[in-house]
Image (cartoon, rainbow, N blue to C red):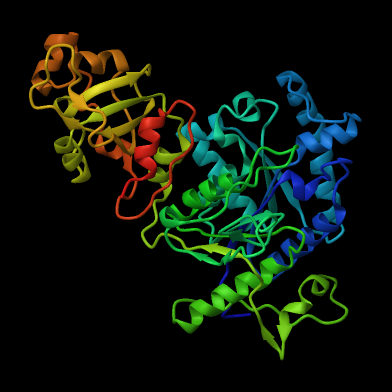
Length: 456
C-alpha cells in the first residue's frame, strides 16, 4: 500500500441504474454495491466522486405519479421532492459503512461564472481531502432548459465529464445497462463486436441508437460526448455495466497494471476476494488461477496533452451567446499567442454583450465580394469552429468595427475600450490534430456544428 498510486475516480450513475423504469422503486442491489465499491476505494486511499441522476424518478415514486410529466413546473416540483429522498437514500447507505457524503447541486449558470466555478472546484478539493464522497446532481429545480432537452448540458453524462475535469480526475466511469460499446446493436445483431479501446473518437464506428430510459435524458450518444470532453481534459473514460459495479475495482487495477507493464504507472492493488467479502460476489468470477482478467468495458484513452483549468472552462464551462467569423490569417495569429484584432473579423452572428462567450469560426475570406454577397464563402470549405472566446465588445459593436484597424476603433465607436476583440488569455482552442470535443449547444447552426465535428 505504501507505493500505491492515489487516484481520483468519478462514477456516474444514470436514472435507469438507480430507479426501476416501471415501478420507480430504488434499485437497492445496484446502489448497495456502488456504495461498497466507493467505500473500498476510499479506504484504499483513493478519492471518489459520484454523479447521481434519479431525482425526478424518485419523485415520481414518492408522489405516486405513473409517468414522467411534460409540464415543466411539474417536473421541477418532482425533482425537488425526489432530490431530498435520493440524497437521504445515499446518506443512509453510506452511513452503514460510516462513510460521510456531501451533496453538490450544479447548474450551467453555476460554472459559467469563473468565480463560482473556482468556488465549486475548491469545495470539491476540500471535501476530497477530508475523505468525503461528494454526490453531484444537476439542480433540476432551476435548470429549465436542461430538463426539456433544449441544451444537451442537462444530461448528467456531460455534467460528469465537466466534474471530472474540474477535480482533475484520473478516471470517469459512465455506468450504463450494457457492458460496453458495440459496432452494432447487440440486442438485434448477434454478430455485434465489442469495442474495447478507443484512441480517436473521431474514427469511432459504434452503434449509438440506444436511447436513454423513459425517466432519464441521456443515451449512448451522450456518453460519447462526455467521453470527448473528459478525455480532452486528460481523464481516462470507461463505459461499463452498472449492475456489476464491483468491476470498477478490477478495471482500474487492469488499466494501472497495464501501465506498469509499459513502465508508465504504479499499480493499484486490489485484494483477491475471499468468500466472506460481500463485494467479491460481483467480482469473483473474474479471477482465474489467481490472476485478474479485465471485465468487458470500453475505455477511451486520455489526450496526452490535455486542456485543463481556465482553458477547459472557456471551452466547456460557458454557453456561447453568438459566433464571430475570422479569416485564416487571424486564426494563425491567435494560434501563435496573439490577441484577436478587428481587422481579422469577417462577420458576427447572434446577440451578445461584452465579456460573454462566443464561438470562434474560421472561414475563407472572399477576395472581392460583389454587392450583396457575404465577405466569406460559407460552403467551400465549410466553416470550422476552432474555439471559444470572451469578447471585449458586444455583437453590435463588433459589427461596426469588423475589418478595421485598431486605430480606427475610436473614430467609429467614439471610444476604444481595447485594441483587441478578445485577449489571447480569454481565448481557448480545440485541438485540431485529433478529433476534438464539441460542447452541445442548441444555438449552434447545423452547418457550423457539422464542420466542427469533422475538424481534422
